[in-house]
Image (tube, rainbow, N blue to C red):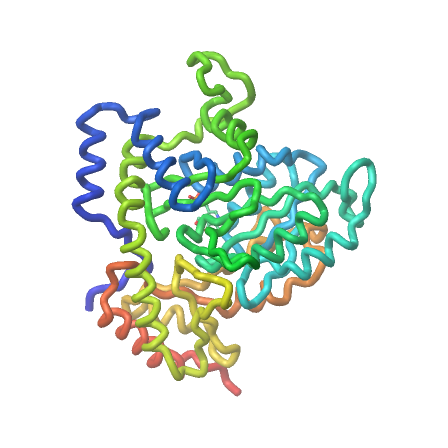
Length: 395
Ligand SMILES: Cc1ncc(COP(=O)(O)O)c(C=O)c1O
């Protein structure tokens, strides 16, 4: 039987035409397609500005740097994430402080954030970690799997302590949350900067690529300049006002982004339909909990994930699916605090990470993409049903 991949980009004639048109102009970098993509993305997410970059990781690095994070600083974040959301802090010499996630969102728990900050000390003009003495410089929540973090609560806490917020929305293009006034806004709204990613497994893709969005013009100026070797808008080619990087997106990738953005509503609706097929096909399996979502959230699923009952060996179930051509993965496993660059550092984990550990040992992801058929979804479901008794742990 044909294998079913974990993810697959949704590319059609529109994408081909856009990329071909760039090839024919011969202008492959620093051109009009990047501006079109940025304008379209800012409009789509409701932000004042959007700056396209070469990857989500590059965007996170710039957002962290624009927030002024440096050596001696720490940033409050979560370990249940992809490693880039912590590495970007290290790039600037800072350290992450890993707090536990709320199991309903899999994102940074606002209650634990408040408790941690309440336990910090005001000293030498800043809020300091009570154990390490590092200055708490920012908060960096992650919109995991396309479900928005509890932004209303997180932004409230961060505002109380006047901390800038960087949103890792790399997995959450199209995901929205409802504000207390009833309005629906995109993830990361209210943060100093939010970062999206367009790797081919994401909701929309540019190949490699990312986008930093925000509303503050000073942050915009720093991000645009730093992604372009430290040049300021209008600077001559060899004038570099500040330390910068080459984190630019190229025109071919931007053109792909323009075409994908034009189809984003159609792609997200299709992904929503596939998720609904999964919900239906997996109903009534007590060993598997399906994603769900908070009532204030309008998730745009990045992956379809399952929380496996502790009575079933998640890893054996994943093996069973892969052996039958249904690509699946344990996710995020290991969590970041257990990855080699972080594992030996107890000072990064002030409180136990019980929910992170539980999610990391029980969650798996199964094939999910917009062009999946209902038959494929049913094949995944029947392979899961078949695998559960085989993966059951002895009583
Ligand atoms: C939560 C999270 N942050 C950051 C990234 C990094 O994005 P990129 O792979 O485009 O660098 C990803 C990508 O998978 C991600 O899932």
